Image (cartoon, rainbow, N blue to C red; front, side, top):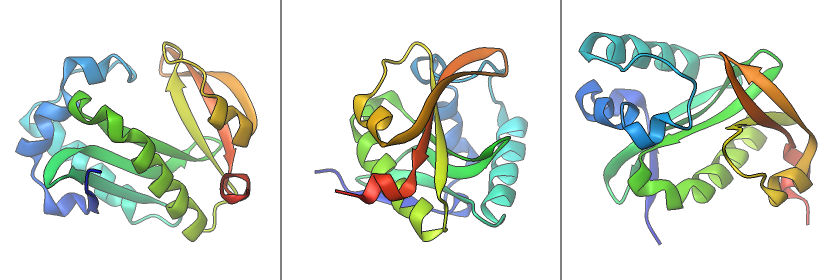
Length: 158
């Protein structure tokens, strides 16, 4: 089992995160946006640090076996709060463990429900559907997503 650590963005550098967020395989699962550069990555990281300070939010860099793998967070969404997981393709097998930790964060932060948006190219996940209050197609920044409205209580039941 890989050791997963969640650290503040202040414990990583823009230069370390830049190649991850610009990784072509990763970008195929995200909304379209220009590649980051040395200036825009710093601005983006500062925005995430500000988001982390908001009530109900938690944004962290993800280290797997001591290597920066990406980032994750619970952040505001138009309809409440969403879970975001953005990790390098080399670590995609760790996504479920990261997600499970984040559902624990959602519970600790007092959320009743969180959203998880997956690009329409991703398959439907039965376990997410079973634990969701509802599942719907959504449009975000010009891309279509399957959005799971996840009940935090249901996630921890059984």
